[in-house]
Length: 75
Image 1: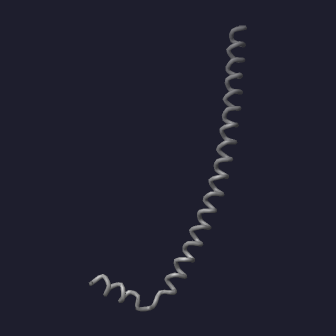
Image 2 (image 1 turned 60 degrees about the vertical axis):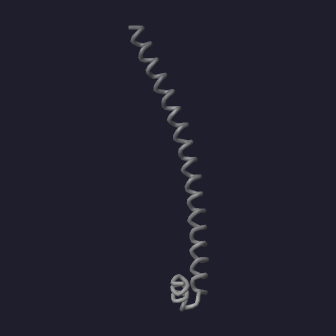
Image 3 (image 1 turned 180 degrees about the vertical axis):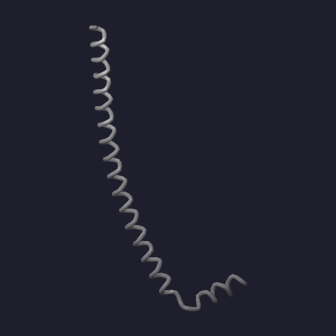
């Protein structure tokens, strides 16, 4: 009977260790997720800014730019 209690105690100890390990892993994953979310937001902001710059450059092109490019390519 004592060995059964010892076995149960060992299982409880392993369960407690596993629980603590999973809590540490979960905390690390939450921190990583937060950092990746911030990084994603920064990249999305940069992408939006780049899109605005490209649109501004396209708006500055002359209307007949397609014909100029086509004639230059034919030469």
